[in-house]
Length: 251
Image (cartoon, rainbow, N blue to C red; front, side):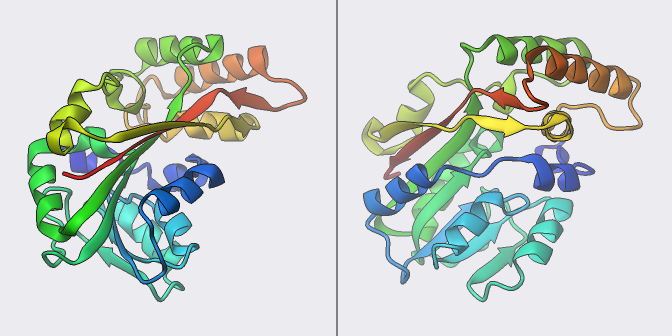
């Protein structure tokens, strides 16, 4: 399936159940890039606007670039009241943004879908001199028994599962190749996620690889995820051990 269409039909679920990013990370992002409300940010692969809204709430002007119509439409409906929100139908490799006009490019939960060489060239085109690219993920903590059992369920019942977050390689090489001279700043923030049963099932269904209602594995998947919830929940809530991973540097 073409990358652009991987979340078609999942936009509502994605919008409802995908987590935002911790305040500690947002404060770090702003301070490390010396941002003020006069600065302009391009949020690339902005999806349903989860991260975009957090930037808008900090009073930045944000160009939200998203190729998937379903996801972009939800973002536009949710964020239309922000005068500093500009929605763009574009890709990471061809944003449609004016050259040398952006103070920071952000990518939340999306870099693993991009053609990294072409995206790097596009960042070099749209960014002002010495401006950074910030890559960030909410990542499940792989040391958790819950997370590992959740992965086993996905391996068994999700045909497109290659690992959480697209199975992205977390070793430094991929980032050394992307950032200028192989130099970047890496930070990790604890961001455990708490869900009720509906939220836990919804979070699982929001993944690109998760079965859709028309798929044969849809009901077995929900049953297996529900069993996980029952096993690991307490007082009708479950905590997914999670970290927010941040990579910032010039390209």
